[in-house]
Image 1 (cartoon, rainbow, N blue to C red):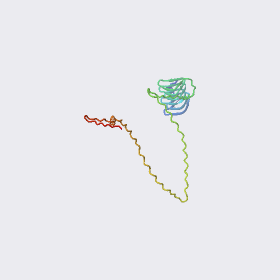
Image 2 (cartoon, rainbow, N blue to C red):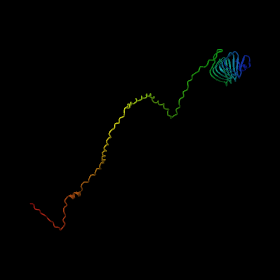
Image 3 (spheres, rainbow, N blue to C red):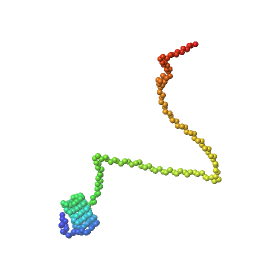
Image 4 (cartoon, one colour):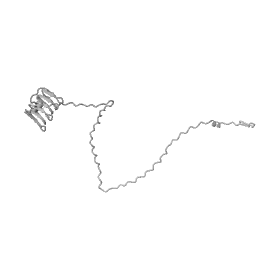
Length: 241
């Protein structure tokens, strides 16, 4: 396999995209292509692609050989070999019978070292739906778990229709004839109300009277007369008839 220096020294059948050139679209050719500027789209060559350190290729590439010293974003299909130098940066898939990745190069993608049909562009990688990681809440030891939300209140009832307005009151037609005045006799004055009865106040219960003492009993009994000594007794004798 020819190196980048050998291909750079051979100016025959070699096309160079300068640092200030931008190519966007589909590019095909039967010559070697050296990219020092920027190429976007699709790139199909029957010879060798050289991406120098100042070059940027954002395209799907189908070539015979590829030497990457710059930046390539896309897939590369090569019928012979693909080489990433220590300055090379690539994001995409490589499919070639021979793959060289030098120490210091940056590569992110997949490598397939099977046979490749000449001129066949690499297929786009199907998008893979990765399951989203579910985050679980961290529960500290001793902390109470969160309570589930309480069910919402009962749904509001449907608004009742407003009650119909009451019917208008009927008014008697006004008399058309002359107005008659009816005099009523004066009412008699009402008699005065009877005097209010005095309020009844219950009397306190009288305390029980003490029983008759011995002095009262002695006063009612006849007291014998005391006759002094030396006095004469007078005896009255009544004769019975």
